[in-house]
Amino acid sequence: MFSSFGSIDDETPTDTAVKRLDGIGHVLSGLDISAIQTQDDMNRTLWTLDAASKCVRAVLAEFRTQPATEQLVRKSRHLIDLIERARDQVVSFQESRAVLS
Image (tube, rainbow, N blue to C red):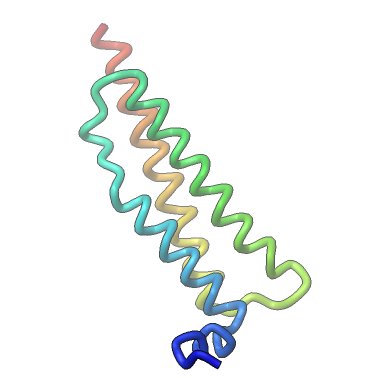
């Protein structure tokens, strides 16, 4: 066997899930709410937040039949909280722009 593929077999489902959550967090770290200028920017940001939330929930759904580790649950909750706070900021930003218009 190729030695470079040996680590794939050693990875647990939890390790894979944590890597997926890290990837979702990486995508979210690239969002800049202060850079929203247009309605399209706002829609794209909200779509990204919704997609990220669905992805986190999909990762958790893989563990419905087996207990998720504390690390996985903690990381998932943290991401969901960040997504909800970012969504609130976007919505309040949208509302403040509507008042100014």
